[in-house]
Length: 431
Image (cartoon, rainbow, N blue to C red; front, side, top):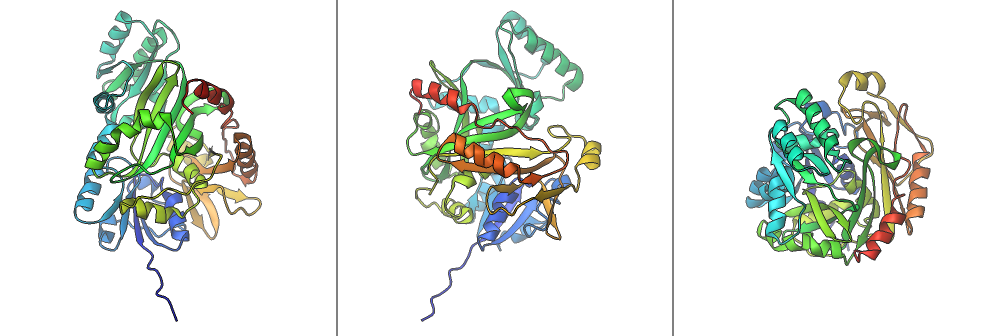
């Protein structure tokens, strides 16, 4: 007797820059119907040849069984669709606000009885300079709002009297004038930078939780300009003091908000406590690609279950996952002339066929060849897994050696901090 074939859900991915291509592509390969929309004009070639695309995502709302929003800023639209009965994986106005307005995020942390670092908010560079002169200390300059995507503007001071902060503020005043908008000066503390994240199904957080160590500087050993990120190491856990002290306290609030998505909180921790820095209330990049390397179930099915409010334990690998971006000029800067000269339509060559570990980023596929497109110079994310950090690193860099891209560069030390960081976290009772 023939059994009725299970109907595969239809997925509509609404993307800001095409960052969710890897997730959309994996969802398609799992046998689901997929459509992808990319908002930013210069990025609209991303995904060509990988997934079916549309220029008018609104036309496919009725077609879709689930709509996935991959960035902040779509919260109102996502909530309205959810209210109309649609399954949605994505943010809300509240979670958008948590990420985009640092001041609001910090106030919400205080409201939820979570200790934060002292900070001041400014719109005037001169006011900020005067503040540092009157309150000499080491600080971090943090842009707020959408300009926080310009990671080069984030500056971590080293001088105890704040003199380096004053010099940078004066330089920003000359180069940015009044266009930078709102920014924060946050007291700098020394410790281990670590983030904790989890998926939320509208009612509760799903286990396991993800513990992540970001590598933001362009060069190894934390040298060079700050980027969005160059790579990440991570592991999954069912029990986390870091989660209990931070995200867990937001569970009732997120349930009231009917949030169905992914949320991350980045922290500095030391022997004196846990200090949350900022929220990411969406997929993290490259976090989601490396998470995928550690998730043992189909990503499309998992997202559907979360959007549908199902409670389940995510099937994840034991051990560690690491990932590194392979980038090309002008990354991390925006320079169309340099991109067009050195990187546009450059071919990604995979020397030996690989089934796992390669996650396409700003690529298109033409006649079976992967070509670089978009405007940022982020070609792909390569991931490795292992029962130990060393094993995961070895697999990662073996896989990278199998990829050939002209003029490409990447960090060679993703995961190296784990030996020292883990000792400290154990000593502080956070592992």
